[in-house]
Length: 203
Image (tube, rainbow, N blue to C red):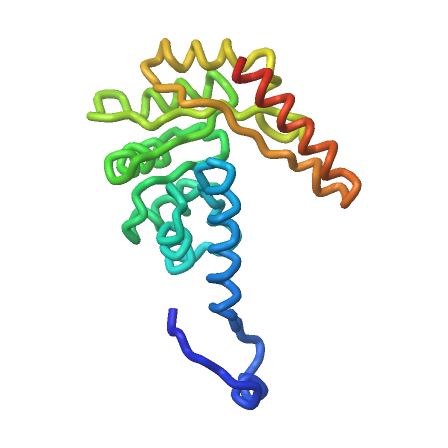
């Protein structure tokens, strides 16, 4: 990323299409979110799928984020290759073939957490890292109403037990309230679903 300060005349001369980022605003937003979470004693792990940028990821870490969240093995590989070594793949993986080898290699390069929502996924991850010096942390994805991925809260414990039987370290649970996107009026209900679903699953 090249950092260049532009005045109004310079902006008017830019050939479009072009991406122009206001870095002062970016840094202010990053700092505000970091402060918001620190004030609530919450470890911030921003999702990098929105910016897909090593530079922005580094700025988030410098502001206090404990690591980054990503959506795919490919995204994790890019960030690990850029020196960001604490990553959470927040999507339930089922790895086989080349993907299993990529996960194994990634696990050797970074402190890795991985989402699961099935015994099939857990078994594939365990097979991929069998014999490795360390294993990725596992977080069980909870379906809190989006009906896309995840298990219902009342079966999370059974899946966690199976993960542990496979030698995997279960670090906790996570969720994605995708049904919040239905509109502004849906957000409060989706947030309540997240709280109740995660609480029940953790219990």
